[in-house]
Image: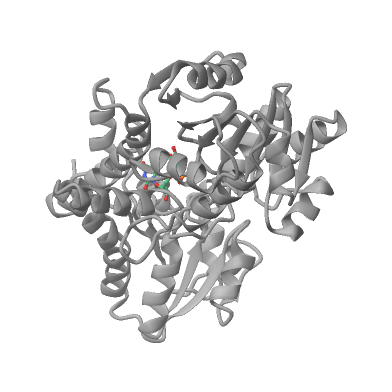
Length: 436
Ligand code: UDX
């Protein structure tokens, strides 16, 4: 099938390279010439395992191209995916500017029947809106169908998720369009769900907000654990065995960040307001999430007896491991809080340090975790990169000024940390082990 994917961010690029790998003829379009040049040289503008291999293979075998010429790519394609960004506006609504722009350009290029597929995360009602826009701006009478096909891939494992989705959701207004998109996904042999447009659009938001809710729920429980002397990692484990609950997304920590959850929760609250449907439950999710980094810093402050003049080593800056993405990363807020109160921050991240440096040029950027801990009063684990899980804690302790380890993601065994001569403090875990 001839496909055009507009937008080469995480969603667009990974979708494009995977469809090419499945044997389709794919043109990935972006208005950013530098990005397109980089892609043509076989390199990926995003840090994502496996993407460059797929770019190389697709180009070599002649099925994958990169272009800035949207009109030509649309004319050559049967199916056009819209996968451009929809960042949050201050109101919480997604900014539909890029989607609108692309819809108009598609309208101007139409030369026959096309299926326009919305892959960008857009509020319920957007499919109809895009169809109306295209019909209004099309040069001649056109025959198009608009399909909603939300994307559920996770950064850091985007290629795996795209080849192995839990489900493929296809929201369409007629069989003809739905069948065509089903055909495209058939080689993956994964469950497919056909719905109307509005339901498909809501499935994306309802899923992401539910995952955010699980995280905030366990973070709220972690606060109770701290007061009651319980260990949230054990509570989560005990809950997770219940198949109705499931173990995933029950890791208490510094809260969710990234490009999706914060934005999608805000957007669903705003959609609720528009339909006069109070999403109070999601306001609570936001409230718990916003409080986590503040609570973490207050633990450090209380333990050290103030932050002025103290040195804190931050391990991990990216919003989660295996990415260099800093969107809504908790490290940003934690650094702001620490430095505002006069602490010195020494930071290390295996991938995101360079980007962080443009936000905070005044910090010391360490070569590794031990270098970051040199002379520190406390080490604060912010992102659970694998390489931090097996640190030599005795070596870490030896270079620190004071022995405090704040584990923002509960990756360490407290007894093991204490045995290395460090004072351990996690999230929702007892300060000292209960005496038997
Ligand atoms: C998420 C969704 O998982 C994906 O389906 C959607 O398409 C995009 O948004 P992503 O943002 O890449 O993906 O990351 P994810 O692995 O889901 O983690 C999101 C955030 O939640 C991270 O900040 C992570 O640290 C946090 N998290 C996750 C927790 O705090 N606890 C958990 O148990 C799980």
